[in-house]
Length: 128
Image (cartoon, rainbow, N blue to C red; front, side, top):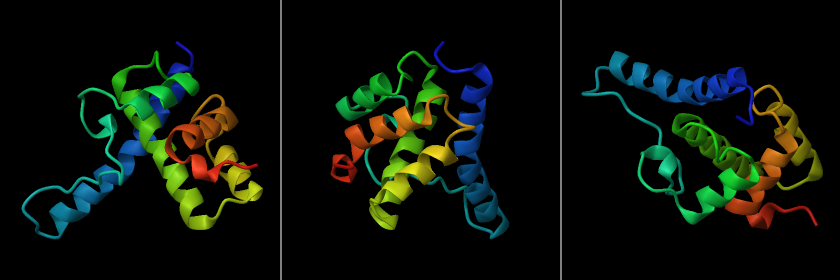
């Protein structure tokens, strides 16, 4: 296993929290059923079907290809959220550093993880 088991569980739990909170708020508001947040881009991270080519590329480059499916799904969601952040906040070196440092407690190699995310999901955010 390439990541520490604690990091794998922490990543999965960290990324599941928004869905749990959103579902709880929906139930409290009286809606019919819990709502689930879905990523903007289609991905196997929302179901257990086959991975897209970009997902497989990201998992390989970020060294998550040997992890259990729930951990891979969480990693894909985190990578996509990092790309969404760069699309929204800007593509400055400071933004890249902020994202990598923010993921330090979640993934073992945060700079490599961010680079793999950018390469697979948002190559337009590469620093030249």
